[in-house]
Image 1 (cartoon, one colour):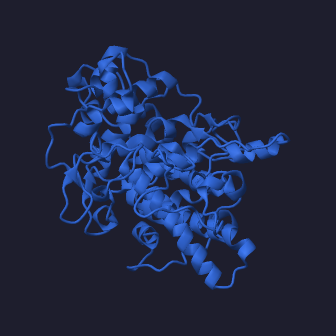
Image 2 (image 1 turned 90 degrees about the vertical axis):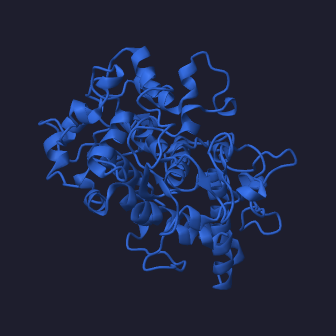
Length: 442
């Protein structure tokens, strides 16, 4: 993937703006990475038709469309998205503005695991050992009615996300035991285990997840804040271009069916593995089937979605007035239009990348005459420029720059406090990987 020589200086700043000025606004929780770009406009019916059953994004009859990436990565991306967008507010009658900003600042800090901590959310913790999170065998903790006891209810939406949550609970508890064995005082054990778990998770994002998704060269380039178009300053924001388009790339990687256990049956994500209920024993995941060299492969990113996402069940969509809203693709397209996102081609020009041609985007055959909605552009760019396995420059820069920017802006992160830190848990191969972290919590 070729690098842009000076993306910030040459393409992202107005000529009279100093090189260190932030591009994105810093007020509020969300904002624009490219506030000067106009929204893409087009016919609403034609837009929804692209994503509806029978449209361009309908890959329900496709076969043989596996890519090279391990099948579990899009679910880890969804877990990160939930973590960044959790909206936990501080509790108490006397809360100052700085504390509110700190709590609401988007961070990759496992807030969905820890909630308000052992004092503010005691139901998440082991009453007999409050340095540990409450853990169950094979599932997240649940109350007597089967409701998940988790810091973010979205982490029970399907089996993959709840099983990731459970594995990270296990990783925290494993690290707490190790720290106690190493002589960490009881009163310090929770904080030390929380930081260790968070740092392993952040390291995985930077050194395992992102290189797999966007390529090592781009990750190394944008580790330098001066090489980024998006630079968090003050209280960082989540750009809409990221949250409502680029970071929804994973919808295009969902396989048609998954094998969760060796020798077991295969299942579609929906309706077979829908959440908000206890996880059946046959749905408890063997992580080597989703991550690592021998894992199933994710679907190739090409703009088409698997059948289970084109016809979402009522449990996920609720009652809908428009039939197209049963399709996740149609919902993604409509969301981008409602928020006024620019086209993918517009952002490509802005950052100095070569835009896809109309033929490469491939929308004209399905009745769309304008430039490409950003979410769909990211997937088509991945197909054309990334072989269906890696994001191209528009999608790759949006994802890598925002994730690195938010981690760098977190004063508790390993990159802020100890940038040369390395994982302390053992690696099964040459390098520490997400699979090692998940197996530590098994």
